[in-house]
Length: 341
Image: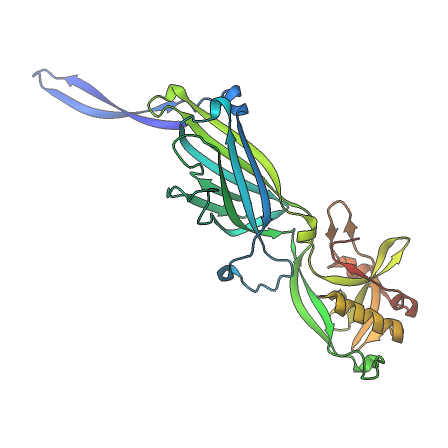
């Protein structure tokens, strides 16, 4: 970044009476950017990081109706200087964490004992949290560069565009004799929930930038940076705890179960627990019914991408491919999990 330095120049004007009049004039001059880091110094500084699940603090827990919503993560960042880098003077430092596949949810903290083995130095740090990036400055402890580790707590929101759908449950589908009740007697409950359309890795690029050199001479300063990449949340962590019923064909889920309401049209059958989905499927196998309560049953072909772990059944996908279910369809449904083929 180029900086502007304002210099004041005194101009002297000599009059006929010999008196002097001075008037300050401001002149903008440019200061050259800090020199780039020497290769040997750059090679002697390593940064590494790792991530583990972290319980979300109770005061930050908000019921948003999201099934896979927010994940708490503790990130451990370690800085290891060797050779010529160890003990060099640190003038300033900044750590940034840039996310891909998810966003950060407006909060971050360094635990009370942020440096492994000893309490924090007491210096004040500035945090800047945006959806795509966390920025902490200063980050390094001490006036010189020494081996050190610090942990960061963040909230991660995985996935892509949010989706609003309904989870299905039934108060009763079986009688006391363990026989299925009639389709007209089944009362379905629909619970609104929000989840995401993409279930993939959430990764972060951790970058440490620091200014080193003499505080008295700009000729002996260097701007250095090192970075690493970590996984904040793997696919198992971001896949929502939601289940569906589907009919397999040649090892792939080609058709998924949907319900049709004359008022709202077709919508995918989603369940908040595998028990609800399995009980629903068992009832269908026993009754061979193609309707439940006020709803007719049907099948649809979802849009799906193996590479992106994307399921986007809302909109045209359900409406355009929906077809009434047959007795054979409802008798051969298997349990599936959203985000899995």
